[in-house]
Amino acid sequence: MKTIHALAKRLQAGEVTSAALTEQYLARIAELNPALNAYLTVAGDLAMADARTADDRLRRRADLTPLTGVPIAIKDVIVTKGIRTTCGSKILADYLPPYDATVIARLRAAGAVILGKCNMDEFAMGSSNEHSAFGPVKNPWDTSRIPGGSSGGPAAAVAADCCAAALGSDTGGSIRQPASHCGIVGCKPTYGRVSRYGLVAFASSLDQIGPMTKDVRDAALLLEAIAGFDPNDSTALNVPVPSYQTELERGVRGLKIGVPKEYFVGGLDPEVAACIRSAIDTMKALGAEVSDISLPHTEYAVPCYYIIAPAEASANLARYDGVRFGLRAGNGAVSLKAMYGATRTDGFGPEVTLRILLGTYVLSSGYYDAYYRKAQQVRTLIKQDFLTAFNAVDAILTPTAPTTAFRFGEKTADPLQMYLSDIYTISCNLAGLPGVSIPCGFVNRLPVGLQLIGRPLDEATLLRIAYAYEQATPWHTQQPEAGISQPS
Ligand code: GLN
Image (cartoon, rainbow, N blue to C red):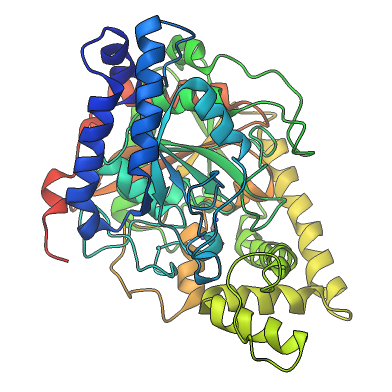
């Protein structure tokens, strides 16, 4: 497994150069991407230039970090100066950002190599990558199945070893659910832990950037590299970032883990549930104290999210009007309004259009109180459930997703079925809490993910529990080699 930490050792020992490594990754992407569609843009020349700069730094042993020379992939919702950033949408198909997101600037400062930009559901709205304007991503474990969404491109790229690790974004589960379906580690940090400057906004009170990696140590070191205050994002918290890596090996003995009874009801695949129960036994064997807890407002999370997220999206996406950037349609239109209409009709796909309509509706006068204000009140209750639970436990353990990766087309006809794929991940965003998904087994050779949810800003405890579990189990060492060559 080419983890960041393993590659860093080889790079720093002079066993391989970043240029050679980057070439290997570019070759692998060229070989596998036609089948997977995980990358939308491969920044080959820029990546080779990054690699040569990193090699120079490695030779001088100047200012080395675990990321120096390591090839990383980026979800195409994070802006990259001079590298096309599409958000999986036709409306931004040719958009070249004039600046780097803060997380990109931090990766570059650490010496990372940016390989390219990964496919995603349009504007991060989706759970299967079937809403990308550039075609779906295939799951490397079985190419007839979805990789999860919306960060399906980064998840597939990590699982198929088309990068050392990736950055994704998570508004309602978009890092954790595809991580679960692709058998990798995905971490959504606390709201405000990582700067959103340069993350194209979907729902600003929910969005967070986070690592998608091959193991927990990589998630810890990548989070450490991107987290922390940023004057360019007023919601970025000005609090110290702990050394997640040094916390990892402290074990779980004496830690209290709660299992919410509301997460083990109808809709949860029994075989997925069995993997989770066996993970609970492992946690107990490792010395954690596991108890049942209740999060009574869980059933309201999906409806609450599908009011708040579209409401915020409808405001955020108003900027795509054909005037300032992106696609312009209807040039011959008789009025400005007609040009706006033509641009937005032509540029947005059906799911984005649906969400804008939903969001506009719940914010409109007469409905604001009935829907939007009510959803905000329910959001407070959901948050309160967690804070009460954290009086008794240090972390909460749940499945990440109710099923393993489903087949293409299985849920596209019924948006509600699709929305229910995020039933276990959404609450965490509504409450602003950190969540991690780690591999915890297989059902019919498809990966299953285990989710850990923590107290605000307590990513360290989550990663520590995740690491203890990972080191005691074989799941993270499995790779989908056979799956990639399967016919689609
Ligand atoms: N699947 C959820 C949605 O469609 C979450 C997406 C996300 O986290 N970006 O909104």
